Length: 247
Image 1: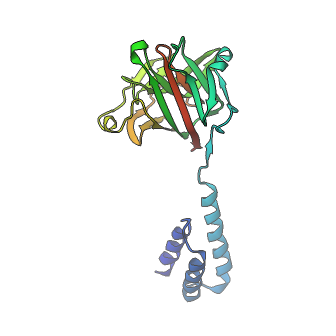
Image 2: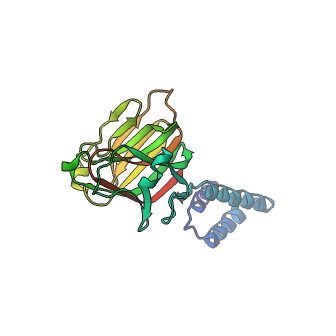
Image 3: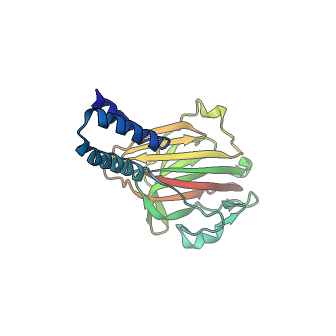
């Protein structure tokens, strides 16, 4: 019975809020009652070491954008670098005055495999001027000035879809049955892209829109992340608070 309680204490120790003094008192009590004293230092060392391993294994969330510069980012096509800029702690493309002549992408310098990406975004523009659309590429590869890979779609008719850019087209449509009550088409929304192995999950404003399992083993499951603005109407897209947690 004391061994079960002892291991119960071990499980509690892995929680950040655990009171270490309380643990030591419990450890001393159970150990002195039922365990040979010569084993206590060894067991204590094992427990504390286990706790350190747990603490070190917690994934770390890092910012992908410093809020001031495009350090760590570059356009897929170097000729389009001036189409992306930073203002008011946001990454921006488009001005809502001029039509977007062609798709343009701003990519990370680093590639990612298993991760959880988060950001806030706002897409605005007059649909009477043409298509108002954006997206977030992920696990994407670069071929010259072309990006190939998954895209978490943004815009009317495409919210929450997974689109395979320059490869297979639309993979799965986003489920808007709940999201339609929370979505702000011209306002700020949040996106979460979570990839673990072959599973892809998309969330807008905390609502899951897609849960996709890749069946094609030839498709790369590691690549860059990129923000996009689609050709068409006089649009503007803004991104802020971009973070990633590698899993």
